[in-house]
Length: 116
Length: 115
Image (cartoon, rainbow over all chains, first blue to last red; front, top):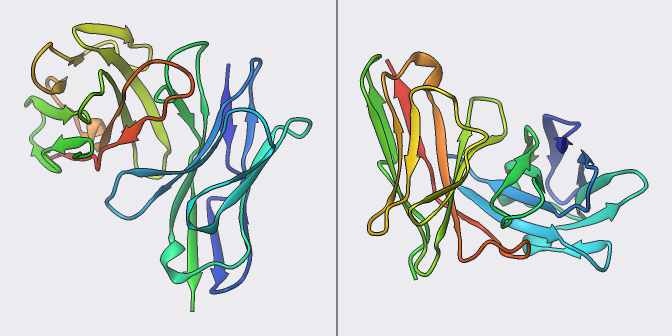
């Protein structure tokens, strides 16, 4: 069965500092991986996705993630964070052997808190 | 093109009442997914529907929960005889087709509180 582990529940960081949010997955089949952001009382917005090809994926708002098959990781990074990046971030893997990206298995989330 | 619309945004129900959550997918989308987010938890998949068909309901509780996506109108997630443990945020997502490369778009959720 597929699963996702987000190793940090909370990450505090100062503005303009770099940040890495960690995500590990387990899957016995080819994986599609995603990072979503959730602002307070909002729905989820897709930051980036890995389907195939280059292992370094660039997303919106200056975020990027690297797919590492040997370490089964898909860590999210940003070289310089802004106050507006304060939100909760979810890593997800697509479950099952068919269907669209909607059938996702999510990690428990990492709350990123950017301090001035 | 409006996004995925969920209503109500907030819903309060007393124990034993029924809760009906509605989801209107994006225009042109025929696939709908429901997720539940409990406090301090990630989203858990509940059910995947196409028009008039339930494709995957492996995440649905066996009792009290049902979902439909009729030919006309929104998708409905129905919870009968709600209990305090049903309090959560329920999110709907939609996609235009079922291929693996199709992104699903999320609504803003319905926050159900059972008192």
